[in-house]
Image: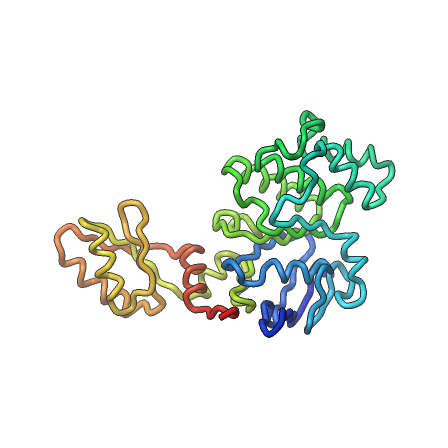
Length: 305
C-alpha cells in the first residue's frame, strides 16, 4: 500500500483554481521532492493531503485512509512541518515539546520528550527559549515536534528556507536516517541540490502537475540540449546569443554561459557560427535540473492572472 495515492485533486478559492487535477503516488519509505515556483499550489496540495483542507474535487488515500472521510485519522499519523516557525518563543525547547506531547496524548509525556530531545541532539539546549534559537536550531525543534508522535508520513513545506548550508546538510542527513527506518517523506523545496537528494521528484506549476520521476528521468524527458560557451565580453555575447534561433535560456555560470534549447538542431547550428570568432569556444554541456525548472516556469501560465 502506498503512503500517498491521490488522484485529480482540485482546490478552488473563489474563482481561482490553485490545485488543478493533481495526482501523486508516493511509496512507503520514499523521499519525494515537491518542486514548483512560488504560488504554484505546493502548500495547498500538502494541506489537502494531511486533512487540513477539503478538496473540491478528486480524492484518494493517505496511509490507507480516505481523504474525504478519515481526515482526523490522517492527522494523527502525519507529521506536518509548516513554512513558518509555529512554536511558542517564550517557552523553552523542552516546554514546547511537552506541550505537543500533551496535544497528542502521549504517555508518559516526559519520556517522549526526553527521547526526542536525545534523538535530535537537543538535550543540551532543552532549557533554551525557542525565541533565542538560530534558524537551524528552530528548524531542528520543528522537526522534533513533527516526529515525536512517531508518524508514518512526514510532510515538510520548504523546511530549510533561511538556514545555512551546514544546517541544511545536517537536516537532510536526519531525513535520510528517518527514511531508512521506514518513514515516508514528502518535502517541498526550491533548492536543486536538495531535490537531487530525493528518491523521486514531482514538479507542479500553477496548480498543474507537469512531471514526476527520478531526477535523471525528469531531466531526460524534458528534451533539452545544453551547450557551454566561453569567450571574451560574455555580457555582450549573452545578449547576442539570446536572440539566436533555438536559444531558450542563456545564463552566466562563472566564466562561461549556459545555453539551453529544446530544438537541438537549431541550437547547434546557431552556436556553430560563434565558434568562428576568435576566443569563443562552444562545448556540449549537461542539462541540469535547474535548467528544467526554469524551462517549466517559462512554459507555464500563471493561474492567478
